[in-house]
Image 1 (tube, rainbow, N blue to C red):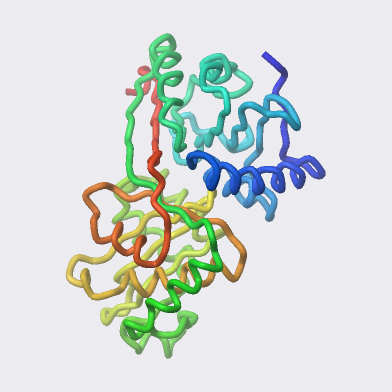
Image 2 (image 1 turned 180 degrees about the vertical axis):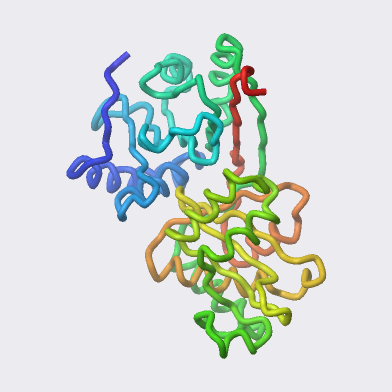
Length: 312
């Protein structure tokens, strides 16, 4: 195997980011959409202060076949923290991926971790290696929605939003607390609330992860009459919008519409890429994403949670 190159430092980082941004547009419009968006999102955050201390591995440069983003090793100190121990992978050569993933320089199979991506073919290599290393794999597939043409998306949400009365964005302050259903920025003080209602959370490790996301990435919520958020969405380290939730009694009232409008407008203004995955049974969220102009990817979103059997 070719030696892996760390691409987390300038000027290679900048060249890789620009190369990947161009490559993403080519692959989306000319071929089938793939894991480009997730890896591209991680590289975007590496380029911009890198708050999660991620690094990029490539098998060769500039003619890479496989590219992987992951936390730097000093971040992956907890062998059971698969929130932190997360890998995003894109490959042009899935037939060689088994050799890549088996390399100890690439993945530590002695700890719990997860791999996220949009190439279902990655799963075959994961399952083969995990069987040989006594690692349990839990697999999940959902639908993937992403933005492609941000200018068109902005016009779409501006046109659609005339159908609703959407409050202006306000910082959470004493005046804002007195007004019902205002859209607010979330800070880390709401990590416990978000974690409590996150299907993938509800534990101490996820709480630390949510708190870190809210400290470093935008989170938007709708302030309710009980003087607390009743609906929210948070961005994480690969620019994915996650942890979305609305309190049951306030569902069907357009709260996610408010969040989608402000969140998408904000991200477009900052020129930030974004995407999200949606479970097949959540038809209302799917309808919302299509309405605001996000495009569904036929390849889907895939997650493999890998846990050594000694920890099961």
